[in-house]
Image (tube, rainbow, N blue to C red; front, side, top):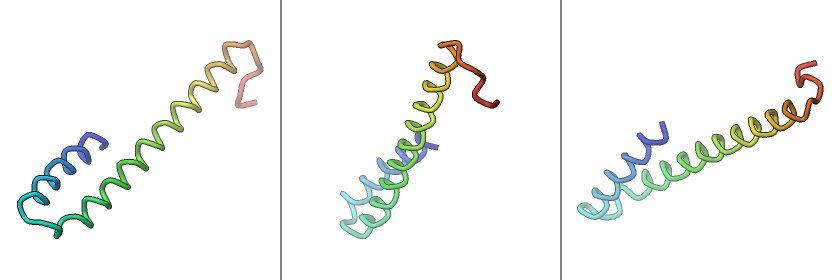
Length: 64
C-alpha cells in the first residue's frame, strides 16, 4: 500500500507540474495518508521489538 501511494504521489507531482494547482489538494491528502501508514508501521515495529525483548529476557509470556 505504501508503494502504491508513493507511485501515485509521483504521478500527481507530474500532473501538478503540467496542469497547475488543481491536483494539490489530492497530493496533500495522499501525503497525509502515506505519513499515517508509515507511522502505523513504525508503531507495529516498535511493539514487535518490545515483545521480542520482553521474551528474550526470559519474562513471563505476554499473553498471560
